[in-house]
Image (tube, rainbow, N blue to C red; front, side):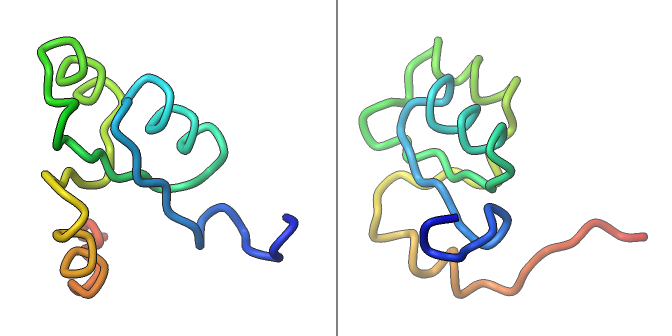
Length: 75
């Protein structure tokens, strides 16, 4: 609200599914899980339950992901 950006137009990139992905989804934001140092069995289980919109191994993959055409489920 401070920057005049609705949550659906923002994006959370985080490495802790239980805090970052869940927090983003509760705020109405899409979320990307950064797995670089956080790809553990516990985090994978949380990520499966929380369903991040994407997963990236490092931040260098973020730009390509953001430039990719949006994928929407069929009607």
